[in-house]
Image (cartoon, rainbow, N blue to C red; front, side, top):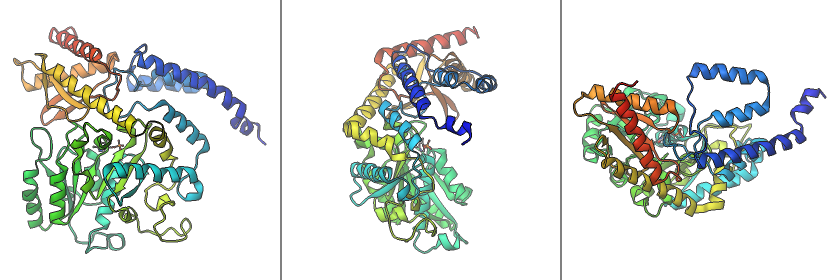
Length: 477
Ligand SMILES: *Cc1c(COP(=O)(O)O)cnc(C)c1O
């Protein structure tokens, strides 16, 4: 045996380093929650590259771990208000460590018995909450791939075409979706080869929800040009503003036109667990398919997305291809997951989310989602009371867009001020927020992801923004 190989797989070293690492991580968690470390340290990408080349060159695992922990963005910090990813439940992260060492491959049942069983348990759990009584589903690698998978199912289910065997031929296929939908829906359409004409965008109302009074008109317009619409996609909620489309109206429309109804609930689908806010998802149980990210609003470490079908049989309708060396039979075998997923090898995706569900259940997710939605409403109230600020919309979810205004300046100038504010916030690293454009206007954007962000934190944050704003106005930088 080569010496390097026995070093590589040394159990004693694993034990020793593992104890040290867990101690360091627990300390990071504690310091993040108490705001004793910065939420983020921003360095220019080229500088980062040089630093990490140096660290890499040391070949020292202790330095490597220490710097990864200190230099990464800290999602458990109450000043983290940026992109939509959970501060993960610590015990779910420990399950992640377990999965990484066990490393079951998941494509076929024998290569991941327990985690395959857990995948059925967690998807059935969410199906029950959604109201899919005969539902079934699986987990896949993120909302982007999940939406593509569900839309491929929808396309394969078009009655008079056999797309799997014959391709799309002369058919001009399209879906309908809000103009505020996540970019991955547009991307999915193009990956499916449907091009520009394959996506019919529904304009939004002032709350950035799809304007359902335009559904018929948009449908008829496309149909009269020979385009065949096979699906409508609801956003629940949208990414930019956290707006929920009217799912009941979408469902009725889909039923009337006999088209597939898919819901992108990557972010907001988790509100199904909130007694207070599940009303936002009324009509979700009428969808043909829905996707929900476990790593956004359900405290699981990245990455796992539930793809759920109201009629569970449809979960087998995406990939008709035969792979004889893997599957002996072409039946609906729930336990051979690669029959239904893009992935062949897949990490033990169910385990981290199952940890959250097993330990904290519906109550835990309810507390998480409800707290975040509440905090965001509180932030909106505080912003409304400040003269230098303007809200883009009232929040439905935990996403809020707003900007700092100056009535004497042009839109372009105010856009530049808000961009500079966001840049300064990023570089100083005291808070982490992002920005977005809604039509021509630049907005600051918060996703309240941390239930430990307090009312006092929100006041401090808004004071901080005002101080940056004043400095910019006085041209201090
Ligand atoms: C985040 C998001 C996605 C993409 O999900 P990933 O897991 O990041 O791939 C899709 N749709 C919506 C509405 C989202 O918020």
